[in-house]
Length: 201
Image (cartoon, rainbow, N blue to C red; front, top):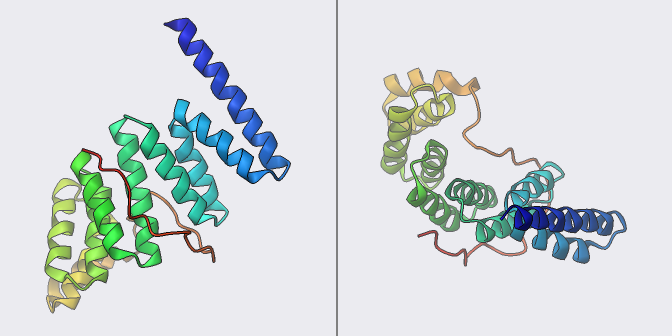
């Protein structure tokens, strides 16, 4: 068993080194193939590659890495993070039905204030205010210190005409991000909407 693990580690290290060399040489298709093979061994590499590509504005490529990671791992928490991150990108691009489906899939894996908070944010954007309020109230029942959820709930309540409580919660506007990823400004548009993500259950 230990020999098999060592062999897998060596294979992963070799693939990753070859992928880095191919990328440095400008052979991006080859690098992508090698990274994908490495992700099959250690899926968490897909999260790291996705974060890197987000940091340099390559959002479409980040989605591909998150999908590769999601499809390669059996680890529930990693699958959930991939779904949330892809959902956030879909939300950013205005693909609301796809984002909603991804957040709901993430919530099927386990309870997540991040997924539920972003579902509330999405429903606010869709002007589904009672549903947004309900999502955000659930988030705050689990995590009363989630400042961004307080702020978003404040915006929802103000839009619903509940001014007293809305302004009280709106004061949290300078506290923390709702999301687990930071989506930088950039011009890259996705190659395609994520419509065919495998079910998690």
